Length: 449
Ligand code: DGY
Image (cartoon, rainbow, N blue to C red; front, side):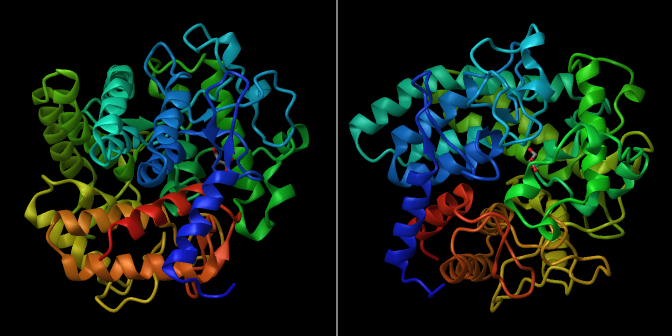
């Protein structure tokens, strides 16, 4: 691919989002992450997509969020997939509606078939971006109207995650499946997953669809995939209930990036609350509490960064992954942790400098098992770097923030809107024409260094 000018890159990103828009039969419509690999609506993708749509088609951004939250369950959970084909006949994606069986769950919405797990709650931040970029009085009035519908649903999502998912009892949300982190097969989950038997017979029963549309070397291994199926089946077998004894859940982990985004959502809700006549105070209090607990429970002074805690063993995972840097987005992160995260980001493990040529990898560059092309085990992801860029700006680091901004835009300029990028040369890996890469590129181009 030729290196694109800013105008060409802008057009490529807009076209990618246009091509990935789906008009659905219920009249709502949404953007799919990718027409081949992820042909339905995904939760955290929808949030990142709306952030870019705020710059070009805000009404479509609000529609994406409306489509997702129309499939919210009665308990407040926002499912990680909303399926376009509720009857389960679609065989382009596994696990589909007939695997998750949301229609058998009372709390699930009748409107759409969904999965039963969640993803990081980036949607309040997306709503704030849509609201604050509303360009004229008509757009502002539309945003206010949309917010009156969305705000209580965002609050219900926060309540679900902060109460029903508080399995550790300290006030952080736990995840019950690696997919809930969004960083599916990150080495951060290896220790917790090792305790889950890899039953290869599950892959005789169920067929992976991802390998039909992407390269095997880019995707999670069969062993990990069979664990993903077993963990989802276990959660499904209890009707996706969150109030059982911990042993019910083969995987029970507190993820630093998920909880940083949870606290970030409370900050965004504090901005949005006055728009709908609500009190921002409780959101600010919860954001402070989550930030404090995150530091208490997931920061390791020995490594100078955040790590996932396995609730079955009460141990922090030893590996260093990009998710452990994400708490930098939090405005109230104490100075000691900010300094430590900056030092870690600038170490040879993540390679941040004011002259960096590529954004940060998903995994420690010095780890012997880094894989430069396999999903979350080394490649570069734009969404994680976009979060870190926001964190660097938040904490007064314009030199690093600008360098990271330049590296992100240049990487997409050279490779196109890929799902993720090779750790060492920034070439595109995974699926092409990936929506959040396109949308976050639009956000970056709209906000020059
Ligand atoms: C997948 O199918 O790989 C997704 O990331 C899980 O939702």
